[in-house]
Image 1 (cartoon, one colour):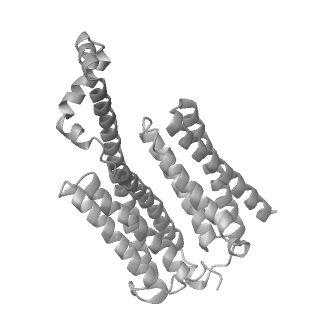
Image 2 (cartoon, rainbow, N blue to C red; image 1 turned 90 degrees about the horizontal axis):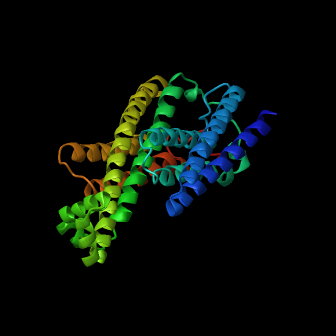
Image 3 (cartoon, one colour; image 1 turned 30 degrees about the vertical axis):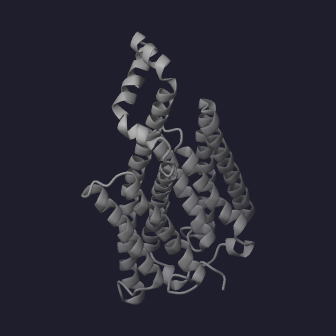
Amino acid sequence: MNISMENILAHISFFFLFMATAFYWGNLVSKTRKLNDFGKQSIKIAFIFITGFLITRWVQANHLPLSNLYESFMFLSWSLSLLHINLELKSRKNYWLGAITAPSAMLTHSFATLGLPKEMQQSTMLVPALQSHWLMMHVSMMILSYATLLCGSLLAITLLIITHDNTNKYIFSTNTKFSLLLLFLRKKNSYLYTQIESDSKNTFYLLSRNFRKCQLIQQLDQWSYRTISLGFPFLTIGILSGAVWANEAWGSYWSWDPKETWALITWFIYAIYLHIRMTKSWQGKQSAIVASSGFFIVWICYLGVNLSGIGLHSYGWLIR
C-alpha cells in the first residue's frame, strides 16, 4: 500500500510540475495573467504532493529519504519547488522567473521517476556509516545548496543568452538618456512626445526595446546574485557538517575523497563569484560567466561523482 501511494504521489506531483512549466512558458508568449496564476497554483499543488511523497517514504523507511539517487533527486525537486515559491513571493512582477525555475523542478523530477530503473527507486536500508544524526543536517543542506546554486546559475546562463544578441547595442549605449526621456514622455502622453514620435518611430522602437532588454538583464543579474548568496551558506554548512560526520565515521575530517574534492571546488567557484561581485563590482556578463560555470561544477559534484562509482560517497546511490 505504501509503495502504491508513493507512486501515486510521485506521478501526480510530476503532472502538476509539467502543467506549471507549460503555463509559465505559455505566459512568456501571451503574457496573460491567468496563465501565470495557473502556473503558481500548479507548482504549489506539486510541492504539496512531493512533500506527501517524502513524508510517506520517511515513515516507511524510518529515516530521512536520502539513501539513494532516486530519493535525493526527489528531494532536489522538492527543494527547487520550495525555492520557486519563495522567489515568486518576493518577485511578483517578474513573470519570466517561473519559466526558469519550474522546468528545473520538473526535469529533476522526471529524471527520478522516468529515467531511473524501478530497482533504483526502491527504499534501501542505510549502511552503518549513514546511520547517524548528521545525515539530516549534512545531506539536506547539500541538496538545498545544490538547488539554490543551480537556480542562481541558470539565471546567469539566461543572462548570457540574452546578452549574446548585440543587436542595437550601440544605439542603446549611446542614447540611453534619450530613450528614457522618450519613455517618460510616452507615459505622460504629452504633445512633445507626439512630435518626436512622428519623426522617429523606428528609433523609439529600437530604444524602448533595448531599454526593456536592459531592465531584464539587470533583474536577472540581481536575482542570480541574491539566489547564489542564499545557497552559498547552505553549501558551507553542508561541507562543515560533513567534515564533522566524517570524523565520527572514519576518524578524519577530510580525506580528499572525490566527492569532498569536488564539493570544495564548487565552494571556491561560488566564493570567487561572490568576491568579485562584492569587491570588484563586476556585474552583468562578467560575473555571469563565473556563475554559469558553477552550474556544470555542481552537476559534476552531485551526479558525476556518484555515477562514476568511486570514493566513499558512492555507496547507497547506485546498484552495483
